[in-house]
Image 1 (cartoon, rainbow, N blue to C red):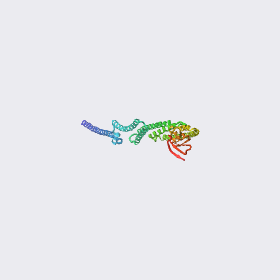
Image 2 (image 1 turned 90 degrees about the vertical axis):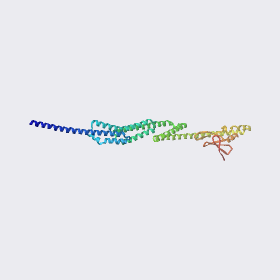
Image 3 (image 1 turned 45 degrees about the horizontal axis):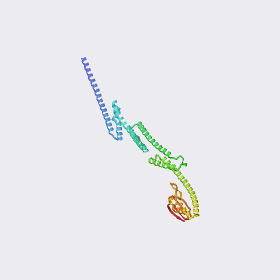
Image 4 (image 1 turned 135 degrees about the vertical axis):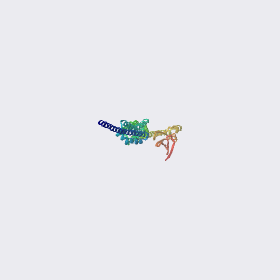
Length: 358
């Protein structure tokens, strides 16, 4: 009887133990099933976010998807409570892929701008366009909400480096034009010829027009220097022309005095000869086409030129009369002969422009 009681107790204990173990394993199975479902749902969420991110074309839309992804409470809960190593690896891979898209967005943008610049002639206008495009990208980067401070700093440094390269190219262009300006300068202005000064003025004027068409902003100082130099050279040319005109007037005065003296002697000789000799001397000077009676005068822009006498002076000279002339400016000479109260303003070919009678 006692043995039978022991058997009953043992059987009861086995049944109780089996029930307890069954309950424990049942709970564990249930919990594992719930965990697997949670991880599976989390994986589906990751896939949905990835698909939505890839389907978005605008950067602003991708920003929204990415921010929703990293802030998703369900995914955060899985990470904090039950995420497996494999699940976390999948999550981080998706997150990194999205994040790296934003890094590539700026790096590719910089490279595209630089490549476009490299395909140009690298003029100042091209440099300014690259700088403008890079600054626009920099402004966008300054408002960036996805990237870390470290990545923003790295990208910003790359933008600044390329902007500096563009500015250096502009300085090289400016230097080349400054060198050209210096090559046009006259070494010793005081002793320079009018021809050398006029050549320099022509070259500097062309240079000023060229750089003004490129960029007055970048070349303002050089344009001012060119303008001042041209003004200096023009003043020197005017001074040379004034000196030439004064010298020409002095020569003309001396030649007129010598000619008057010679005419007086001719007139005296002619009055003491026979009519035959007078007739012979009357053709001494020929006519206006011979240009044997001339004067000299300064014409603006041409310097000293020769003036032919009008026919009336030739007629007077052939008849033994003396004559005189004077340069009156504006390309005219005034002619007259002894014994006449009439004067004639003529051009350089001896054509009478106007007549004056006292």
